[in-house]
Length: 114
Length: 116
Picture 1 (spheres, helix red, strand yellow):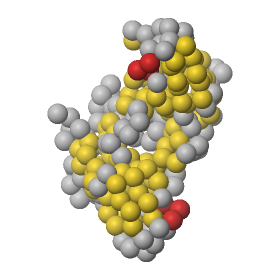
Picture 2 (cartoon, chains in turn cyan, green):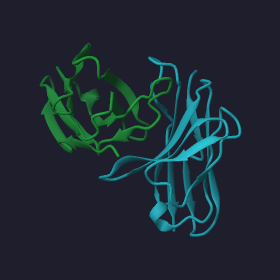
Picture 3 (cartoon, chains in turn red, orange):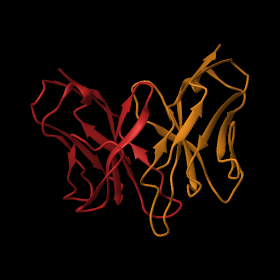
Picture 4 (cartoon, each protein chain N blue to C red):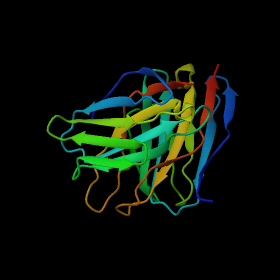
């Protein structure tokens, strides 16, 4: 089954404790993105990657890092989480083939930073 | 950068009625406009999309219209059913030649409630 998986689905942590949210897709997609969803703000892009070893900032990259060492994986790293990073996070992937470039979203990771 | 405005933020309709959600965008270069449905506890799922070379697209009870001159697009759901209740997001992106719509700018969402 074609899918995007994220782990963990729920995480409660404390300020300053480094964490990583993993994202994996099995569709051989070139493009992957991270979004955060906050009430009243919709979804905002954090980082995206056009291919292995190619990443770039989205609209709200501050406080986040990403890496793309393998095509299928795109982890989101919070080196020193703060309470304003409490949010619902979504990973997404898409193909670069025209007509097949729908963005597929993972199930989400709900992060609470105390 | 692109800015997408979505209205209304909440919409309540009776089962069987139609629902319309409207979005405007700011970047005239945007050429791809998807609509996503998000059910409680799940990630957004694409329900329909439209590219800038067409003005309307329909898929069963769902249709999307695009007015490039006015820079707005709308989602129309006819004969609504309780299972249509969800949050709907519009989005816009510019698809580069040889590239993909990897950078979506989303509207803030519309909570649609269909009352039985």
